[in-house]
Image (cartoon, rainbow, N blue to C red; front, side):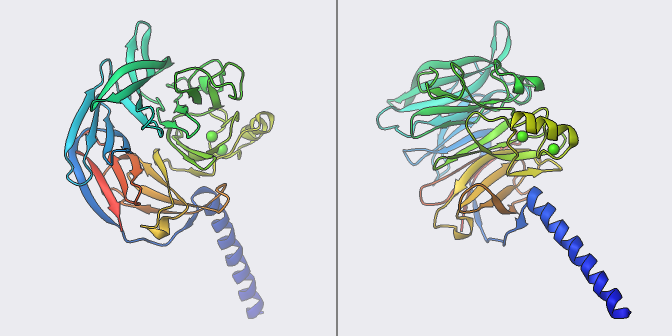
Length: 367
Ligand SMILES: [Ca+2]
Ligand SMILES: [Ca+2]
């Protein structure tokens, strides 16, 4: 009798543990092993580092939300101001936000930025292309303007693909319903040509929309032909998504997975894509990159994700196919405050930028 009772008890324990692991696997992933990392403060006394790019000139190119674009020497930390972008209006989370450099910089030295401004009809967002000549940013050309903006939820991560298209994330600009409105530029991932025109192979005719149903995506990275984005949830469900052309990502009808009864009906009717991973409580997911360098072997084939509220750096190990997150591991929790911008050098060093608003830093991470 005693043996039977013990056996049943063990079975219950095993079932409970199995269930727990399954749920943890879906929401947070399995715990990955720890990695010893070295950090070095490259620069400090910055303010809200929003974008950080390892440039073709081996310098770090950064934006600060107040309006400055600078180049930072990754060895000495010396900061050289390139441009105080005219017309930038900082309001809450708005200001000078994302930046991208043309991967074909030697042919066309274009630098793309996205920022908030005051239009005649209110606070808006625009995407502008500059040309880097003679050590300066010249010839601004507006590619897209009048994107709805707000003091919150302005999206604004930029990415130029190898086939010379510009991807732009936009937030819902605090009008949640616009994320499902195909005529609004809000709550979308947009795709345009590098002169601002609409590519002929976009999923919806004469539309810049690539995907929709996003709340506030602030991380974007392309790995081969797979595009990943991070986005902020409301009171639950921050997400990392695999972005598929023309698809609906659910907001505001669906938060995170299609797991509530109202959500399930909407998901079935609208072919909603569920996230690869969701975080509740929220951590305010932001900058996202992909790591596959030899310098830190444990990070190979991983997404690296920063968070603002979570104030940490999270490794998300991908499966071989890149369509599942196998596990996660947090680093630097509360060590540098809110973290938003991330990039890496060709030799595998990682750079992150903080966004506290006071004495913000660029930190180099190596092994
Ligand atoms: Ca979603
Ligand atoms: Ca849900």
